[in-house]
Image 1 (cartoon, one colour):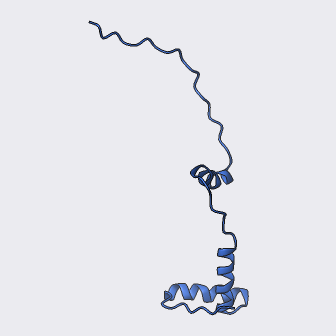
Image 2 (cartoon, rainbow, N blue to C red):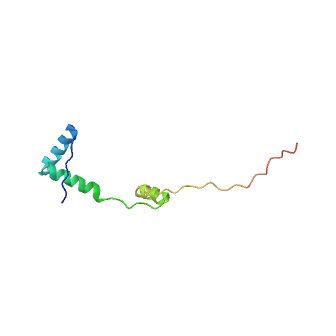
Image 3 (spheres, rainbow, N blue to C red):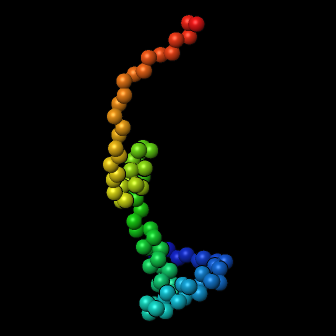
Length: 82
């Protein structure tokens, strides 16, 4: 297993980590390890196209049906002969 040292952690961040660890009855190291494991466990597969990237981001919110306006006849072109 690897060993990691993290320096220059903000005091408020360290206090929050200490509080979370105390609530769950674990050490700060165990809590940080669990947070890293949770954050890195659900890594999405890289998308191969822009369409797939947008769809992957929007799909969890559900779809939307749009009302398309009816097509109209093509208008006659303006007469510039005058």
